[in-house]
Length: 199
Image (cartoon, rainbow, N blue to C red; front, side):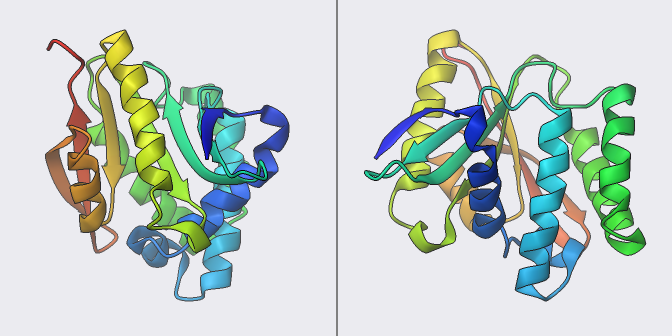
């Protein structure tokens, strides 16, 4: 397995990995409903809109021996976490196409996450996903190793959100600690931070 920078021409493949890998996340069930296929399609559309309005140029991908993308580690640079008004307006039509109920739930979700985003300089980790058929085989751990090497080399802090207790334990292995919790759409969300090297 090889971990490296995303080739922008393969964004459709990345979106597929994200949608399959995160389809059953508790927050996605709460936001998009009980049907797994609808959740996959809806998250795919949501992420395609997000990618069009955020800086995902630093994204890492894990590739298998046959060069297929099997894991994705999104990472936004300092100052890139929260979209400005222009980007929010660009994203709004894509959000509204999800339907009124889902749109409102996503806005509540994004609002809750936004208020926890640290003011101090940091890299924002996420989304991190491994294709559903390959989860539990070390792909996510390899992506995190590369991410942490990059953060340590630059002396940068990192921050993330997660909605799964097992993910908290996973991220703690890489130096993240929980700095906050909030119930979002009936799901406990955890906000985690990792200090830069030497801090």
